[in-house]
Structure formats: C-alpha cells, structure tokens
Length: 112
Image: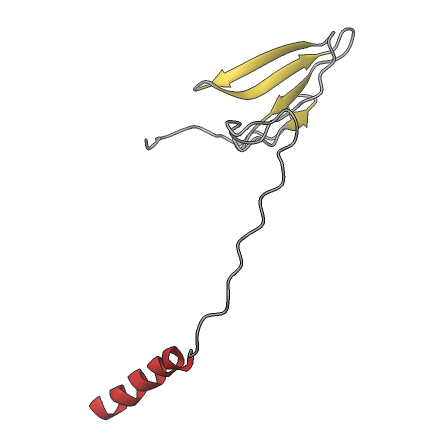
C-alpha cells in the first residue's frame, strides 16, 4: 500500500511543478462604461414597471410588507389580478382567482 501511495502523490504534484516561467504581463482593466442617465449607485435591485392606465383602480394586497397580489379594475371592464406566487418579482396575470384547481399553500414554519 505504501509503495502505491508515493507514486500517486508524486503524479498528483507533477502538474504544480509543470507551471514554470514568469507570469505573463498583466494589463489593467479599462474603466467601466458610464451609467445610464437617471440611475445612481444607490439603486438596489431591478425596477418593475407594470403598465396600468390612469383610470384603472388598483388594489394592492400585502403580506409581511411585500406586495403579493394586485387587483386591477378598468373602468367599465372586468377586473384581473397580477400575482407574484414565487416571490421573485415575476408577475402572472389571472383573469379570475377561481381557476378550478386549488393547491393548498400554507406556511407551516418560517426560519429567520
């Protein structure tokens, strides 16, 4: 076993010794491009813009201070719902909350 261990360790160490010679000359990185107008360094995360008409009535539903659903009622139209079911900012439009399939989604325990 010891006779086999030494050649294996030597074979594993050979690539380290194969790297010889001085390192290549490194060049500095170019400066970053200028920021778009209207943005600053203190902006945190992407901005979500949901187009809603001025006449539409928007009701926000919050859970733990975060908007999880919005009910949009156009004047003279049927309401639709914008839902964030995963919590990552991807909004899904639903024309009705009753889609026939109801999967229970209860929070059993949260870890802080």
